[in-house]
Image (cartoon, rainbow, N blue to C red; front, side, top):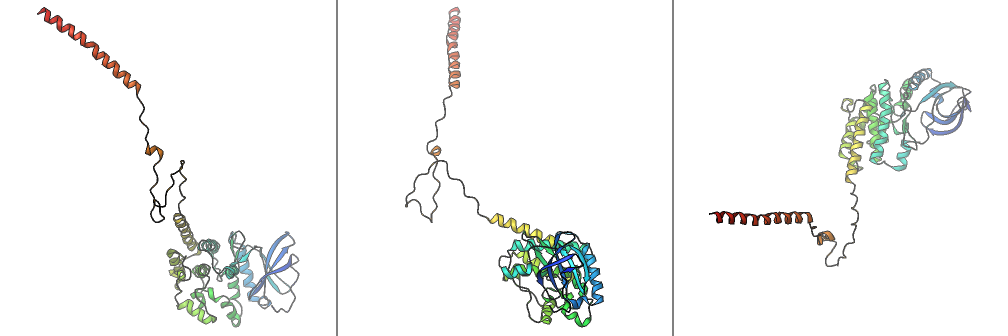
Length: 362
């Protein structure tokens, strides 16, 4: 990046520049140290031609102030902003890891559950900003930082709106900065809304699931036409692992009309979270059952004639089934039976005596 002035080694007598983390068309991000609080930070140093424009500086200050009020685990926290020796800069929390675009370039695409988990986090951060009245306007995987423990944080809120205040002759670089992710209404110059961010989140989700963008062209104007008029290829054509329900959600998010999409990122996130739970439940139900434990007694050997791979063999009967035990003798019942027999037998002489006595009298 060509500059008229050297970059200070310490900004505002507080932030010590250490090493670059990434370079974009509008800024360079450095890892730095906050000398006052003794902590690592990330500093976005904007190009000097942007920094020299009063309108941009004022809009940048307003956007930075609004973003600094956002406090959410899925949004990169803004600590400070300033202007030093002609350099406009933004101080943010330092997030270890890599941006999602770098991860996709390295891996191609993500597993379905992994992609959904990351986008649910992105929706949570963007949805929080929507509730605060802020629209991101420039959602793309480059602006999503993923930590080693899979925590996603969205960055660069408000910068696109600040860039829109620059001279009309230079607006071309701003509008076409990330045309692959712009919503149709943004592409034709309409005011963005939360539904515009939802569309861009849908493009990121499509890319994470398939490894490809829904629309591809080297011509920005052609890309805009495709976002406005073309129908994206169903993502399952590129990744058969995508469930039909998820594919329907992705295509709904990529609807041309804002009213046909989910209204906010919060709503989109809830739908994705429900799909993730259903997908995990389905995968669990499809897992093979644990084989039963071996019988506690040894089975008899089977000959080749009695067992073949194509003909299952019935389980052998247990010893208890082959030779059931005889029932036990109930001595109590036998004794009672004998007593009853003796009692009945003892009455016979008595009845004979009575009969003989009656006959002798007669």
